[in-house]
Length: 276
Image (cartoon, rainbow, N blue to C red; front, side):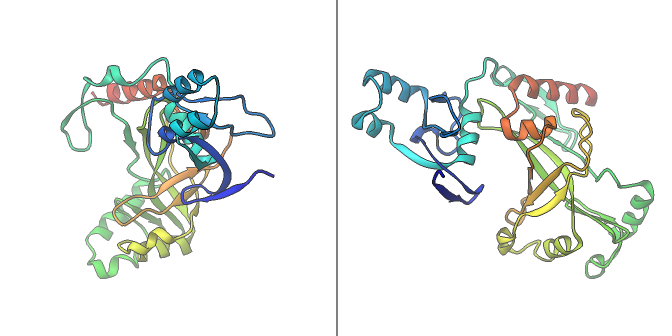
C-alpha cells in the first residue's frame, strides 16, 4: 500500500512528489510525468523548465533533482496542480480586454467574468418570499426564531428545510483562476443551527465538513438538484466551499477534472448576452 499523508485541504491522501514550481497556485507551467499505472497512480511530476533540466542531464540524477527541488504533496493537491498547469490550446488571455456590465453592482468591468450566482434555493416560493419580508422587519434578537426566512447567507422554509449559500469552485485547465458558481446547499437542522450560532466566530473553521444536497439548478448543466456534496466552512465573512462527490454528472466531472477555457467562454458569453 502506498504511503499516505494528511492534507489540511483533502484529508488523508496518497503521498506524491512534484517539482517545487508546481506547488501553490502556479498555472500554465506544463505538467510532465511518466504514464500512471495501477501501482503508481500519481507518478512524480515536473514543469516544462524542469523537463529541460531533465533532458540536459539525460534523466533524473542527484544534480537534476536538486535543481528541480522535488517536494512532497498529497494526491489531491497533485490533481489540482495538474489541472492548473496543463497547457491548453486555448486560454482566457484573449478575453483580457472584454468589457461587461455586472448585474449586481451595475458597474462596468474588464476581463473574464468568472462569478455567477443564484439568489435563492430552488425550493423558495413566492409565499416564502412574503414571509421573508416580514422576517426582515423583525428586530435582530427575534430573527433567529423565525421559521421562514431568506437572507444573503441562510435560508429556512417552515422550520423544516434549511439551506446555506456557498461556492462551487471549478478549476480552469491551465489557469490559477476558478469558475465560481454561487449556489445553495441543504443542511441538517443541527448543522444549520450550529453554523448560524458561530457565524462571526473564528473557531468555525474547525467545524467538520457538513453533508449537503445541491439545492440550485444551474441551467448550463443537466439537472443539478440533489447532487451530493459537503460544505467546508471558511473563516467569518467567507461563504462555505462546496466539495462535490465524484459522479458521472458533468458538473462533478468539471469539479474534479477541471473545466476547459473554451467551456468557460461559452458559459460566460451566454450569461452576458442574456443580461444585455
